[in-house]
Image 1 (cartoon, rainbow, N blue to C red):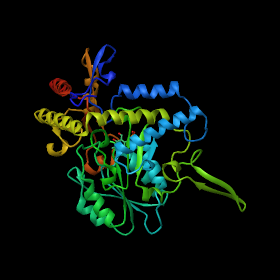
Image 2 (cartoon, helix red, strand yellow):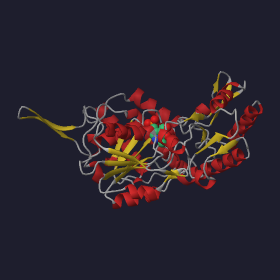
Image 3 (cartoon, helix red, strand yellow):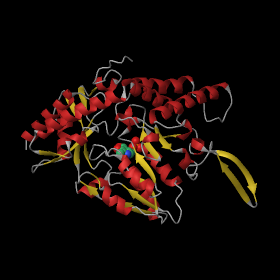
Length: 416
Ligand SMILES: Cc1ncc(COP(=O)(O)O)c(C=O)c1O
């Protein structure tokens, strides 16, 4: 790829040019899932079709070794993209949800340190694994209050104690947009002896992840939100914490030794990522994911950020001019993210109806946005906002997409 890549970067995304039922698509739902990179899809299929063997050091024939080689290559690429100190810290998962479930289930809580503090921005994929642990009496769960649309840091600091084992703080909210300064949470958490987990599902697609210098001890994100296939993702855990995690998702490939012990068995698990990737893995997905990382890295994290900041600023300006809606959040913060939420500001405006309108009114096009709670019940309950309309963006989003939405929004409002 040349250094002078032009944004919006569309040419690698064949779905953009597709017509559905003869209608062209205006896609403003990338926070749900990004459209897929052609190169990633090709890499995915190539591994399946030309090298469909198993990796994981199970079989030792040439086909298995070839798959394993590519899997190792993918892990090295994932470590570079994530900013990990070592590829051993990279656990491939099916996405952020699986990563959060594994991390919650494996975390070494003790009776003396069994409290988890969640940010109010947590997606249900992080909230629910810890909610289930608390229902089972294994941990105590607390949620930081919201201040504006961010966690209340002062209140959070008062919640910390020597019982706090873990603090979870998503760096970019899928409900409010913008980003948080993770260090403002990680520093006091670390001083209190607690570990920090960051859900980077909305952050990683448009920001340098920088795991080792982020302040987090663990973080996770999904591949499908950055153009890689579904069923791919990364859980990064700092080596010192990884060594302390308990086995959680277990099965083939994670065992170092099993022996008879007394009247039962004694199992010794493998260390590092190998202890957490049980069962045959998504080798094709991992290789495609690493291909997507390469493409995004070649585009340049600064260029991607600059494009998203310009798109968010433009969308903010155009949306703010519509008096029948209220855009949530401050432009300076929203510009650091990749989405904009708004709520109706006049009676009779229903996000659900708008959604139907965007998909049914025009014969030549439809517009994809997301309305609802966005699986972020903590954010919804903390803010009292039952639902929002969310426009979300990626490297291919153009100002014309925003213009098309604004014109449709005004048309919808003209019917009220
Ligand atoms: C902030 C956040 N975390 C986690 C997830 C879950 O990701 P996945 O469904 O890819 O596992 C999402 C998905 O929308 C999200 O927005």
